Amino acid sequence: MEQNQSRIQLVAMKQSFFDQGLLDEQFIQLEELQDDVNPNFVEEIVILYYGDSLRLISSIEQALKERNLLDFNKLDTLMHQFTGSSSSIGAKKVKAECNLFREYCRAGNIEGCMKSFQQCKKEYASLRKKLEAYFQLARQVGSSEAACRSK
Image 1 (tube, helix red, strand yellow):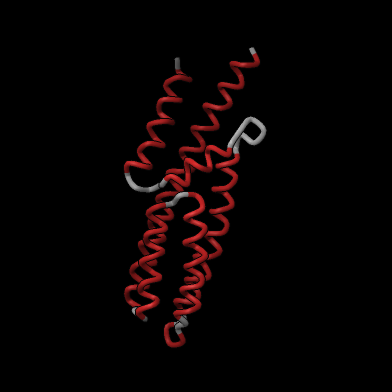
Image 2 (image 1 turned 90 degrees about the vertical axis):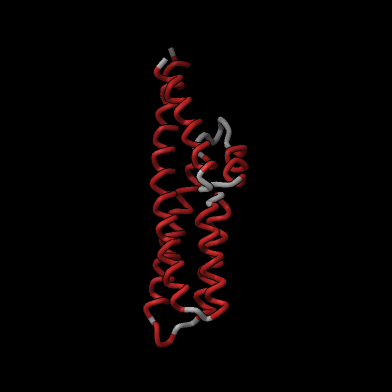
């Protein structure tokens, strides 16, 4: 019974990510690649995304600190990488903020870049927190199912 409740909660949690516009169909496509041989595939991909994202966010922060020598092409290239990483896991809101940042880069608008970068980091942190809770619950559901199968 409790396992069933957890499964229902997991499904509702994932649906809320789509309802809130946090994720897009790419996340579902990743889930379709997951199987019994690699049951944590999506979580592993998302963990790789976290590492890549932190590196890119740090690089963008460093580039933005050089206000007098700001290189919009470098910023755009870094954000292009972050956009691609975000897109690969279906991080819809993060990707949208990345694209807005890139538009400001192309326009040479430093204030727009700064503002959209802060929003981008906020969306990334929010998504990460929610996905971590989701994967924690998914592991609990998965381990309780495995325990039931072994009985």
